Image: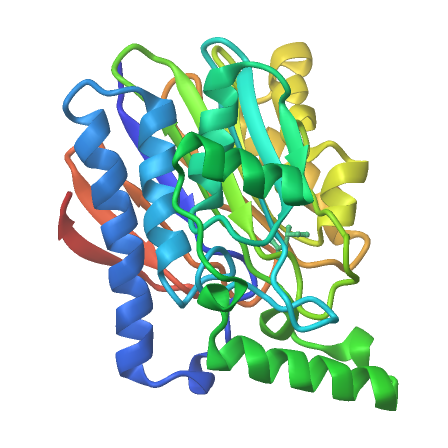
Length: 315
Ligand code: ASP
């Protein structure tokens, strides 16, 4: 079976000029570390679902991506985190939303998946669950960074002067996600996010919604999305792609392109990574850039922020 691993760090990539070369290098290096963490599991015969959790954890701990440390602020200047994970072998899934204290939301989502029922926990119940399971909890400020604080200030200003609709994808968005195919041919997907900057308190996006921002089903595909969550939910993006493959016989590329084209009609930023039943990988997006990366069969790490894809050594 072809091992496969692909990740994204959100389609809200900054324009190149807005970060120093050293910061870009750090972001690419964090993407490579996420791929190494996931590949270490896959290459030893581990499960896809463990690999996607490991990859997402690394990006949650990086300040460069809008998930975990580095998450977007809501309108009250707090962080509310959403995450989900799905095992394509069994269709088991776990999700949390509106969490404020879980250091690695994806690990809490996986703990919930392993428990089996309920599938989705919200707000304080999610935080309490994590604590009870021994998953690391932290103060809400742990997730704060200077860049996101600036994003919040600029979105609030835009709100006052009425230019919120013109905000760049980078000011608003971000998410992290991973998809994988393991040696047994099992697929898995995981997604984690802080949502978007200046989101209303209590707003839940697509990332914790199984079938929308996250979906995995053996024999079809695994998908993790990034972009305007409200549209990912309306189009049931993950499940729609799986259905186009299953019922219309589309290839992974044709199915993902078709769904992304529908989202693009609404002029919303969108991107995703997906892996097919045969281990093929796609990473399409409609914004200026999307943090992304994948490992090819020969174990070579590829990472990218904008058009140019770089090799980052052996996994
Ligand atoms: N999809 C995420 C959400 O709507 C945000 C993003 O990926 O930019 O919460």
